[in-house]
Length: 209
Ligand code: ATP
Ligand code: MG
Image (cartoon, rainbow, N blue to C red; front, top):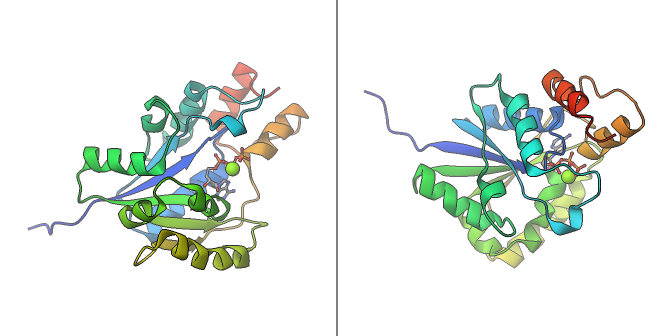
């Protein structure tokens, strides 16, 4: 008889403009290290301050995420944040996921170590930290001391009993969407930095030129 086990869902949020190998490696590493049943890639709506002329529409970013994850049966792409009107608050996403997957499902947010610091600016941080575990992936060029310095601050701000932030080491991948967009503009290669299918989709549509 199979033992009942709490379902463990990873959420990899981002603008994915475009999705790249760094995102996929972080998600796969988290899936294995934390025994996640599934990782949901969740493209965000654009925060107004991040908008540039060169940014792609949500639908295009979503399609690239689908192409990038198509060969991994444990990866899925969610339109939840794209479809929800207004700014995307993490707490709303957690509550919507608990509604869809059941209250008992454990949610693990996978973020880069740089992104976790934005926790201080989240809506209802203490509630967010109570209802989900955060996996902070270290990325190259990131000073871990900075995060460790900030963690007590997070704890103080959130007043959570047990802030659930865990640092995860991933193989160094100096890949960022910003750099990929610049490379395309300068006609430099992006092959192997993004999955082949994404590379082809970008070329076919003339994105980021
Ligand atoms: P941009 O340069 O436009 O900010 P990005 O490469 O940081 O893009 P995002 O969509 O902003 O990509 O990031 C989504 C999530 O993935 C964030 O939590 C970010 O910290 C993380 N991330 C981005 N690049 C890497 C990488 N190379 N390795 C590990 N995590 C990464
Ligand atoms: Mg980023």
